Length: 417
Figure (cartoon, rainbow, N blue to C red):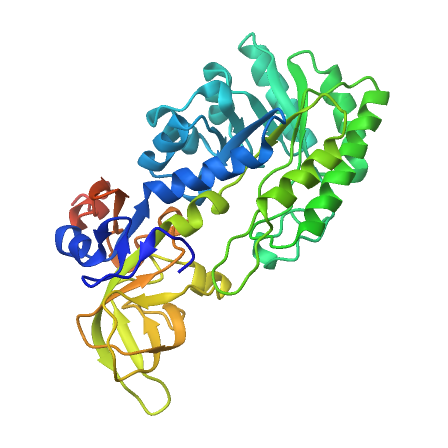
């Protein structure tokens, strides 16, 4: 178990002071279960590591956008990193402050830009010259000046899964490093833009410090070059990407990460902005599921559970590894199981080759499911999305009701006669 809030007890695996069998009985399965304590401690640990360095943590809400989680982080003082108008409206609904929002993403629509301008967000992280010019036009039409930073692509290998690497020159994200100074000069000449910072994000689930150091060094050297061009920045957004422990990874220590940031910033009078996502929520949640049928075979033994790839896509998409724990362990009868769901795809697995003693009806906890679980879930095979529950001490709060079948087709209608 990768968080101290999850503990074994005589009545089954617990989240804080609530047993998972109690949650299953009350809310059903599959169900995502989060710990308020784990979320709070993760945020406060990063904030404390940065200490007196001028900074703003902007939680990257694509990792998990449940309103209860956003509201909790807002109460803790967090800002937010968004990548869509929908995420912007989620932050507002959760009580987030608009002047603590940074808007990333490389395909912002006119409607999204206008809404963000109207609400007065802290900064647009612009990812292309075309976007820069379009934002300038829209801001002019509204009589506003848009605060901008340019997301630069430093061409640094984050040493992570290729699907979540974002800072290499072959990736779609950001402005090529060689073009950054030219794009900043264009931004400085746009009458309806206000250049305030620089942005960089090289990927996700990074477990080595060296890629961060390399990116920080390149970005801060560019800050100095821009100052020589007369473009003086107020902040540097160093992105997110801190990895967590799923299996045997050794994540970067927060103290070392903060030291690398301090070393890169030096004496420059810059505010640091960070966009952590997974590192704040990943190990704060589990996916609770029940074994429906056991299907031993000649080649493989299948445990068919009621959660599926539509609930947790990461194993199918990235071949990601999640620890799977029996909620009430059995003493005997272990064998190697393929933990699979009922979706009609051979890619529908949550875990492969796990040594477990199982019986039909047993509850299983898929660990480290707080990030990119619910936020990437779907209704494939017309499956309602799972419930979400937040545990706070000895209380369990339903923070998202399970979808009904009727809700899945509520917006559809047959053709007229």
